[in-house]
Image (cartoon, rainbow, N blue to C red; front, side, top):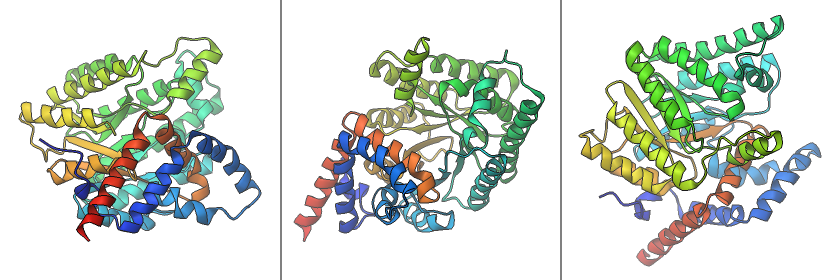
Length: 390
């Protein structure tokens, strides 16, 4: 049975210096007060033009990002590929508001697909609809009863065309693309667009993937409905299944606006729906493809066991595991060493513009129970192992 405790495999791509840097970083992001302070001070520091980019680049950016441009990521792509781990290039620039910025982001996403074309080291592309659309428009569209102005209808047509141009190019080169999940108050808009793209481009295989955040109590039922639609209408369903990234924001908004929270009542229910969703997709693999985006050891182990029980080959590309760069290497590299299809999300972009992403990563390591402690324990174990060999 696969073990996630093999630190020699998990960290063999890292030098002693890299391990020490990662250890110090996880010590820092494990301090909630420091992360809160950093979130408040970072925008001020950039506004005052303080020389902090060098510090960020050498620490948190280096840990969680591949570079500032696509080509900057070449080294990371090569290193991961050397150990059988794929790269998912993730242009992580956020906070844009102008149409020309959305067009530029769309072109950048297509450039990641161009980079992926004919390169097995890059098995997927990925994008967020909010990166190519005004957030307020997506929110208004979430309720289909809302009337759009003529200007908004034109604006949404442009958004739809951007999504379509990405998915169409992905289909032309045969490279799947993940469309990331976002907040519940814009997710219905995204779901409708993704379903439209899947019906259009997933006739032969799963090219377009939706992302389901299982911290929402309605997602398992939604998945079952999607499977029924795919069966009935004859297309392949692509699903990246995750626990989710916006839980605190969701709870706060629900409390402020006085509507029922979309969040699961507890972690156990979330885990149950996540695992049930995984098994459901495996059972329907003839017309489904699944990527398990998880840092959870138990779910990852369960997925390997279920693949064996259902006679699904380890190397079957309809089943992928994915983790974020800089996190859970003990899962990624041990899975890969055992023959499973694994990829890392590799975010990139100008340092200042990927700060929202980096601060979310720091938040995640602070808030997820045991995440930072597990990383520190494994790094310490590997460092001691290496020291004993010298």
